Image (tube, rainbow, N blue to C red; front, side, top):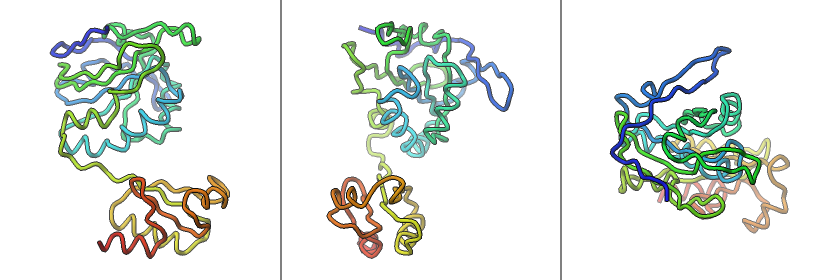
Length: 243
């Protein structure tokens, strides 16, 4: 079992970062003093669960977390600063601060540095998240110590449930569109007008006619999905909002 360090001071280490063509040493105190900070740490940049679920959901819920008292959200991994910088760009995660624990000093001090030599990773962080208030660990969610890479409790929704269980979560919206489609432009304008962020998939670039037929039963665009439900086209979207 990993030690839960709730109530303890955060380890004081120096992180070696590189931004704007210059090296910048950042200390733990720079990140945590006088702030309420959510940290989630993971085995490695560009790895499957980290890229497909852990980072994207924290990025999506960042505004909600901040609206409920969080000053900063930090993604930490035992990777160098150049890897973390590029991963941040690929993830389009502008709402998260990526911190490289390249030597594993912070992770080791947290008691969560693990051996992943069987995968060729060397020493990496066990997956966990925590809420830190003015340098003191308020709450930790550490994944169970079992084989593989469990992802059960360190997710963004679990953290939000702890911080603000009654908070409304942002809707998950995707729109299947086609280049030059006026109805797609109309639907996107309505989504923007209503303040809803969305992910756009463009025919020929992200999907084919066959895919659209398979999931929506039609080849007409746009097709808008909200929180797992098919809303339909632009007129259907207007009706959905009018309700």
